[in-house]
Image 1 (cartoon, rainbow, N blue to C red):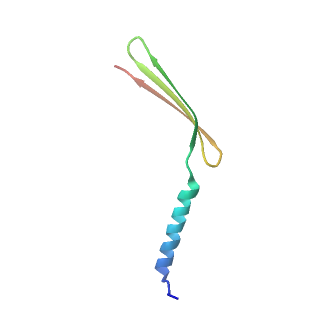
Image 2: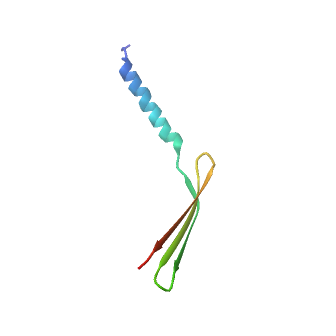
Length: 71
């Protein structure tokens, strides 16, 4: 049986831990997404976007973004 030096063993353990963290992290799942756009008389465009996502641990996140573009 070959002798495994300490550096190789430590590198193998670090790579395994890093790989496992990517496998267990998962991705957020989008539950709903709405986008509302309004154009006013002077040409200003207002966009409102609302997104609800669910994390792998079950928590919900709500994100609301508003953007206004003027000509």
